[in-house]
Length: 159
Image (tube, rainbow, N blue to C red; front, top):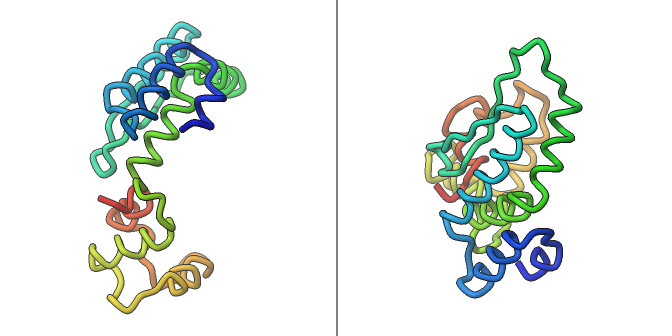
C-alpha cells in the first residue's frame, strides 16, 4: 500500500491509501466511493457504465451496454484510463486483491483448496495436478472449467 501511495495522483487516492495503511485495509465504503467517482467521470464523458455486485465474489463488476451503433471502443478505453487515474485505479486493484487473497498466499494453492472445499476435485489433488490439468487443451482436462463453482474458485478462492 505504501508503494501505491507513492503512485497516487489525487487527494482522494492519497487520503484512502493513508487510511488503509493505518487500518491495514481499504474500507468497503472507500472502495465503493472510488468506483462511484470513476463511474461519474465515465458518464460525464458519455460512457454509460454501471456497476453491480458479483454475488459469488462480493466485488463490484463494471458493465456497459455496447449495443449502441456509435460505440467507439478506442474512445471508451481512452476514457477509462483517464477516469481510473485518481479515482479507482489503485484502490480497486488493492481492495480486490485483499478481498480475494488477504494473506497474500500462493494463488494456485488457494484455488486448489477452494476446488477441494467445493468437492470439484479429490482431497489428494495438488497444485501440480492443477497446473497439469490447466495446461491441457480444451476438452481434455479432468477439470470442469465450465461449471459455476469452478468459476467462483477462480474469481475468489476464499469464498
